[in-house]
Amino acid sequence: MTEEQFKELTETADRMILPFFPKETGMQKRLFESMNYSFDAGGKRIRPIMLMESYLMLGGNEDEIEHLAPFMAAIEMVHTASLIHDDLPAVDNDDFRRGKPTNHKAYGETTAIFAGDALLNYAFETMLEDTVKEGDQVWKMKKLEAMNVLAKKSGAYGMLGGQMVDYLCEQKNDATLEELLFIHEKKTAALIQAPLIMGAIFAGANREKIARMEQVGYLVGISYQIQDDILDCIGDEKLLGKKTGSDAKNAKTTYVTIKGLKDAQADQERMSKEAEGILSSIAEGPTMLRELVESLIHRES
Image (cartoon, rainbow, N blue to C red):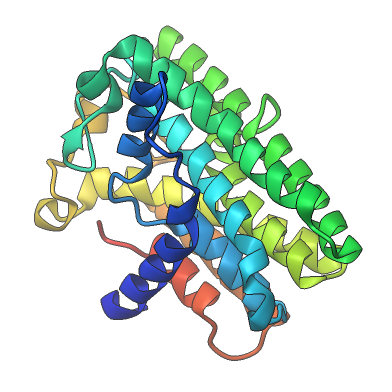
């Protein structure tokens, strides 16, 4: 995927989700400002794009794509909420995110906690408000099913469960391969699986195809994290925009430290090919979703 193609997709996603930003008015105005500060912090909109492109790849009607907008916004809200909470002093204690001060640095820790909570809740407000006013019963049922997917993939059995295990492993400064794969599956892959499944549901895909899209999300999420570990070992610092070797310096347990660089590279390549193979079996020829997936798992930065 070219930079120009990705830029166009990001601009399309932005046009669809920006109308759902909360208005910065009322006595709780500062909360809305804090929510929007992180929601509009220059994210790549990968997850909303994946939802849209999954829908289109599986035969969704482009004339009905406006139905997706509240759900594209919602998944970005959930993702943004997780970043706000990840950056907090009690978790990763980061000062910057995407070149800007993190939310708690800009608005204070208490407001940042409220903003993360509010975004998570607002995601479901946004989807529910759209669903209850929806007239078409077929679309209403699709939207309810999609909401259920996002709830499960972002909650205690998904992203939040992964964050908890990640924290516990950091406390003991160690992780087994089983724990590491659980963290990567729940903390990262779950919010890649969600938009792929939701797009498939909206397109009217059958259960087999939905299950295959879920597997693609798993493989992409794990491959992405393994690639992170590999790049920290042998990546180009100029392309990465940061120094390599931080994992080793901090004695962090990673896929590479457990399996070694050579095996990590082999596993990453195997998972990448499997994900690409599943997508090829679902839709012949090049698609934007396949190109996006390939660019994510083969990235150098």
